[in-house]
Length: 521
Image 1 (cartoon, rainbow, N blue to C red):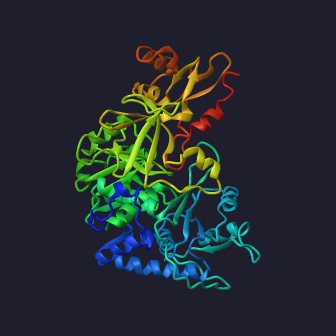
Image 2 (tube, helix red, strand yellow):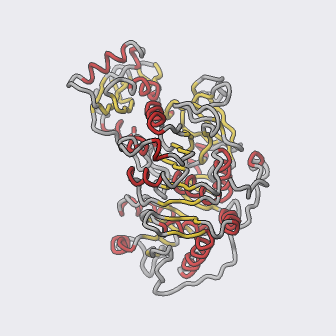
Image 3 (tube, rainbow, N blue to C red):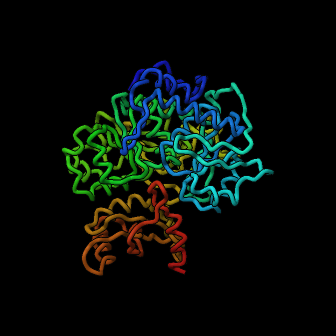
């Protein structure tokens, strides 16, 4: 990576955090000055901006925020499709000190209203096509919340009554940079508040472990309302001085075409399975690619191995969550084990604890806890929930079950809330899924627990099946009989065309549990 930030010792950020004058944008200014003539953002239709042009456009967009009366610390709720304008607005918020709050554009107005009530933004920004719809429930002369549409250049449409603010304040390290609402797979979405310092610590650690370089070109296919696309992919590329091909959405054929001009691709597991459906995925099409990463959901070992066989590239699987950023990664140079999420990043501490809070020994399963300079400030408007996931010493409970090997390598074992207790015995779904997914004919599966009058909970599996014959359940059961203890074998196999997933590809087991709660009633 560009050696712009080597004075930051990430291992010391926990005890001696830097001020970061200007926040994240202060770091980006160093990059734009060094690589002024280099392409920063581009699209496949020929649109592009150099780093110098990017800085100029960001300043114009920042001024359009000021015209709306936006002050440092104000929240900007962003309800727009992925676009270069969206990127410019995000960076303008960082520059101005406003707090960027991206929302999934697939949300309904009812879902949006709930989030508006929760985060009380100064401004709601939408695409011009959505103005009539959004205008029905946001804004008005007497409202503190106003609505603005986002133009193609990243600037906001001018208000009828400008409220220009001439603040000279700029953000610093501990100021909030973004609020990211969690996916809501375990309940009501919560807004995780991330500071400029937290995002910077995480991005710089990733740039180092993945050796991000100014010569890199990223194919960016992820959404911008999630930490993976916004803070991992986009910010890693920008702060490394790399160029970014911005795709409006993931298209396998277009991605493979862009691989011929690029070096880096960051994705969720679903993208890799779709890439492998294309006959265009050949080794020669990926000749210049040096890094493929995967995260946001578990990557099946058979997908990892098949992609390696087809492409000649080993995917780097990593692990993180909205509240702590990315905290582990398989090594860039070294053994990348399928099914493992690698080692702790620089400046990250890990521990695995049992139900009593005692630290587990190597190889024992427990809940993964993280302490890092990249951790969130807390949940917005929810001190109680924050206290329930973060202790006074700064350790954050991830809710994920994991094994920490003797050499520090992390292997996930599923969500603690997904643990099934059947007849007094613990069943970890990921262990059952690993065996189930290896059965011929099984494309993928999700194992979950439902109430049972005798056992307390019963193990059930939803299975995507492409095998032959109608006796799928019995064939699967026979295949598992010699490989799993009887209590771990699902009592029912539910054949399905697909598994319910959220926007980032995570299987929603809460949906499956709710949908099938009455199976044994």
